Picture 1 (cartoon, one colour):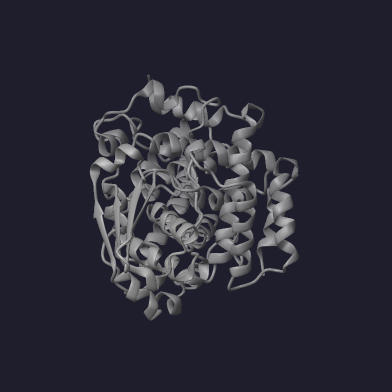
Picture 2 (picture 1 turned 135 degrees about the vertical axis):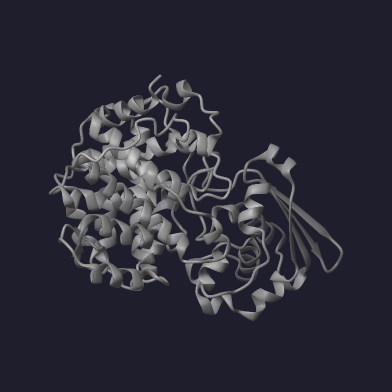
Length: 452
């Protein structure tokens, strides 16, 4: 099988009428999620600096910097909008750490503006097709410290931009190959609590549009970018992929069904432990004063991401978002875990550190038999009672998905949290337009609602 050509045929030959209702609803949920996190994250640390830099770079006025306003080249609009979408760490994700929505949604909006707009049903089609292409490849990826977002979501961004730019088969092959050559990034940015984590999101979106534009101009890429000697699957899967499974049942089976949507604004690897402590708070009435010690056992990969000791550095929000110790301590003290709990003053609250110092985290590779993100929590009370909670599948996962009401509540929470507030009536208007997106004559009619 020529898997590169098969991928391109799947991308180019899928139309709205080919999509099942489940996929359409998933696309709308992805869009709503990312619009909410972008609104809420627009002024979070680093975002305004990047907005200023993008404006300083200048260039053709092709697409809008959302929330802040102003127009810049489409690839730079996608860059900054994606960074804002990721800033709260309250978006979507997939196993392996790929945040596909915060790449694909802003890319699709910027590319729609670049090309003069597109129908809502076409936007949905391109978004779903691009995200599904990335999700399929992600399912056969072993990143081992590489950033799945920087490595793989650029494939989705490129597919979307290519559809918007009406690339032909040869051009789409080249665009995806060029994107493969631009991919990269390390999870060290997350572990060290650096803003480079968010920059990776923007770079993937930016690279998707640039790759499509270069291919349209005739720039070529390696034709064996997936299966070649030094192609994607050699680098990220040790050549272990199954071509028939990889692209089989296209249009019928959707890897996007495995997307998770976050219940808390922190790294997904913290979610099972947060669920566990909040259930113990609810069921046993636990308070910080009751607790002598908390022992958390995690699977290996999540432990590597969020199990390190909690230290506050230059970016307290990021330090907290990527620390299971902080997230569990904050949830115990505050009986919830909300956006405001990741602001610097909340992160530095002395009562949180008192609990953090009582938390121990270890990894058990055998725990993965119970679930990729499974966690065991044992809380020893000062009275000598030990409470145990096992979470095999966290809320928001494919096994325990969020309800429609929870998705809407998350959007409204992000909308209310915004440092640059939008008119209050815009929230309902955005919700309405997203729910009926396939009926919109032009998806760009959403953009005025996303400006202060």
